[in-house]
Structures are given as C-alpha cells and as structure tokens.
Length: 484
Image 1 (cartoon, rainbow, N blue to C red):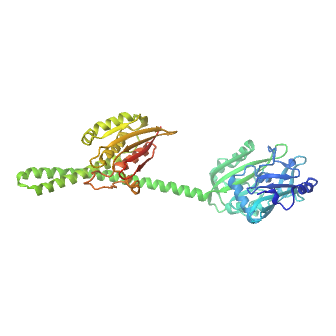
Image 2: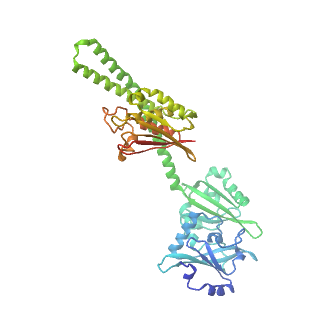
Image 3: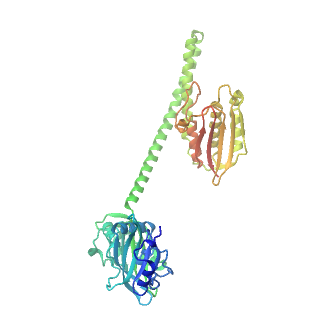
C-alpha cells in the first residue's frame, strides 16, 4: 500500500502550504516513527540528532530514550483515541527553548485500519512548560513526568496517578525523592540518579518504590537529562514502569521452586533410608529360605523346591531394585568433573559384561569416541545400562549387534547407541524413562525398571539431553549429548 498516497492532501500541495508558514508537518508510520516531513524541522531537532527521519516521535516531545514497549503502548492509545494534542518545549536553535503545540491525528485506510499518523507542530501562544494536555496524560502503564533541575515534580500524568497514588495537585512541586524508600533516601540514591543523568545523559534503576499510601511497588525507572542550547541541564524527564505483577510472579515462582526442591530432597532422603533399611530383611528372607531348604534336605519334594526358588527369586529381585534405586539416588554430580576417555569406559563395560556377550555372541563396535569432562563412575553406569539393554532386548534367537557413534557439534558431543533388537513402539518412547516403568513382564525380560531413568539423570548431570528413536522389530537408537 502506498502510505503517502492515502493522504487527503497531495504531498506537493502540503509542501506549498507548510513551506511558507510556521507549521511543520511530520508523517509517522503505524509504529510512530518519522518517515517524511514538510516544513522546517532543523531548527528544533533534539540535541545530537542530525536527521528527523527514522526517529521516534517521542524524542520530539522530550522523551529521549523511549523503550519499544513504551512506544507500542503510546501508539495503542493514539489508535484508540484517534487524536491527541499536547504542549511541548523544543530546543529552537535561534531562540533557545521555545513552546510549541503538537497535534497528532491517526490516518486510516479504506478498511478503517490505522496506517499511520500525521503530527503537526506549530508555535504555541501558551507558555505552560511541557504541560501535557491529552496524549501523555492518558498513558496509564507508565508514570511520565518532568522534573526541574533540583528534582522537583513539574507535571503529572494519569499513569503516574495510578501507579504512585498522588493527584497532580498533591505532588507537583514536591521533590521526587518522596517516591523512594527511607533506606534509598539515606543512601542518597535519588540524588545519585540525577547526577548520573547529568553526567551520562540518562540513568536507569530497578527496585522498590513507595506509593502515597506507603505500599511498595517494583518499578523500572529511567531518568533523562534535558539540556538547553548551551548544554546546561534545565531539568529531567522521568519514566517509571510498574513491574510489581511481574516481580511478584517471579518471587512466587522462586518460592515454588524452593518448596519443590525441599520436597524433592525430603522424598529422596526418605527413599534412600527406606531402601537401605529394606535391604536387610530382603537379604534375611533369602538366607532363611536357603537355610530352611538345606535343613529339610531330602524331605522336600519338587513342588516345595519350586516355592523355595520362587521366594529366593522374588527376594533377589527386590534386592536388585533396591540397589538400583540407591545407585540412582547417589547421582548428585557434586564431585569435580575430570577428563573421561569414553573408549576406555566402553572397554571396561565390555569386560564386565563379558558373560552376557559370550552367551549371546553379541557384537559391540564403536567409532572413535571422544574424551569429555565428566564423572567416570556415572558415565560407566550410563554405558553399562545402555549396552546391557541392547543385549537384553534382542530378537529371539538373534545375535545382538551394537554400534556406538559420536559427532562433535558446536557446543556438545552427540553420541548414539544403536542395536538391532526388538525395538519400541512410538507411544512408549517417553514412558520408558519413568521410574519403575516396564514394557515387558519380569519373566520375559528381567530388570528393575530404573536403568533408563538413571541414564537420563546421568546425561542431565553432564549438561545434556537423551532421546530415543525406534520401531518395533527394527532396533533402537539411544541418542544423548554431553557438554564439550
């Protein structure tokens, strides 16, 4: 769409009209930035600005560093109201600081959608120092007002009234230090902010501020120095954004996180103690059953022997699960990471799994594997669980084939362990990482149901992620990353 072609008055006609008058016309896009103009703007450009094109119209009305959010909110108010008039002071090069009137009108296309704005600036007969008549006074999300060179409030807007609780007649003339806590006033914060703004052009701070009724709010404050043509500071603009809701949400989230950590630690401590205490009676069950079987000797028949074996096997599975759970709970990653040669770790795992490897004739291959910073014991446990699973979940009468690969990425190592086993259905790919979650019966594939949960925790302790790709009867690949 041709933005300027939608104006009621053609550009050349505007140029003739305004070039010979005291009026200056600026065309703004729908975000409030100057895209073209007619008339003389050079005589009131803000200090340090050589060209009006591309700057925010807020800079022309004394707000030197408008944020994107502030610009967006003010434009929304403009679109809602359709028109705004305000009294401003600009640095007129010939006569110093002069008073102007700025009128902003929204422009809509044929679909009644705002496509931009026209801003008319003209000399004002009134001499009210930067007294905002409409637009700035209507902005409710920000407290926007002017201070004199001593920090006394010179004007007020509705946002300031809503945020701070004062009406204009109650606060204009008072020093802005009234908005700060006694601790900040004693520390000289208000004065230091003005001095920083004088020295550096602006000052920003975030912290607790006071409302009229004494309640605190979390405010983001920007103070910008305003200079005359001689470079002397004649006052300040002050913009405060109320971030109390965001701050309260952040504090609530931190408290929730703290409570969650506390509960998690409590559960882990209880689980550790319970698991440790249960090992003793579980071992006793096996010992007593074995002793009783030996004592009875030839008096027991095959049916009795079956029951004795069932007792011992069940107790043995309990012991295996408890030991796996204890190992899982011991994973804390608090020890210092050391260089770990993954090829050496895999070789140690193969040695410890040599019985399973010989029984199944498993083939385990790996490409060149890296040296990473980590915990050797945990990484050994990681590969032991993955290789053990790859051998265990083999196809009936099939020979397990396992291949370990590694690829260096920008900020991590990507490793994979692939097998040719029974595979996993897509719906179960996340389910298998849940503690004690099993996809097969104990008789078909014995185990504790903790292995992959432990793998995920180990990978997480090494700054990585783990995921699985698999199809039933077509094998499984476990991918995981480890920090460089």
